[in-house]
Image (cartoon, rainbow, N blue to C red; front, side, top):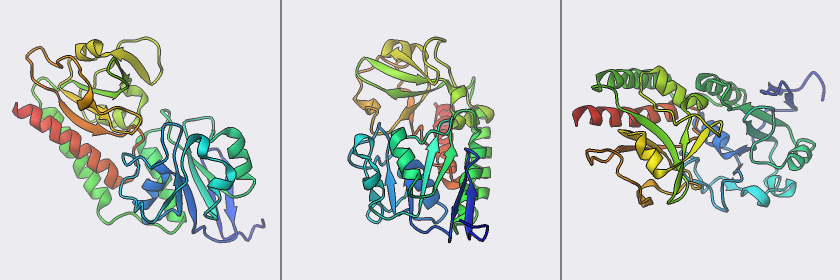
Length: 293
């Protein structure tokens, strides 16, 4: 590759991806692909992680036109030939630190990078959600994408609405984020480890942390311990690897017998302004409802 390359992008590993022309056939990890679609970049294909199955997880795909985007599969189904079957000219992956491509076996990732340029965006807990969003926006612009008009204004309005809702909730609603694991256990999120939950805390939402102990991002708790956190609002993981909360025979969330309000939560969020605004609006709806109880 010469210095006359028509396209290049420095990723979050500090590596420069280069191509003779702007890539137009992008293969992306599902979270990245759905985010790029919000900027008008339609990936030719997407792939999942070991948490996913033979069909795409609709909690992660946002508004992607799945009838026009090839899902390559996930986990053991992913090998280099499968990943390259759509002849992508760029792969966009995510990392949770250390530069490892999430969802891909390291050996598969190595051989993939020998065949096609790869860009990695770090979505780990060390990053702020704003910084992750900025990086996706930069990548989208380099690929010819653009933000939806007024999306940034809508996000600012959503933030302010949520701030006001948090301020107006008497005593503050106790908000717990969790991923239902089974009829016996749940994974309760440690809010400081999740960029999108830190945004909620910055806006005044009363996030409740599980007890200290094992688990960096999650604390494994039984349902009695989850109920003991006394949530007024539960942000519940809606990815396909979590069981639906309404299928859990859980203890009563509140001593008074009132059911906690629930908000769907994707711990692998889309990082576009409009997707973030939608999530903040759902939390604001719950807080406003709690204030009226």
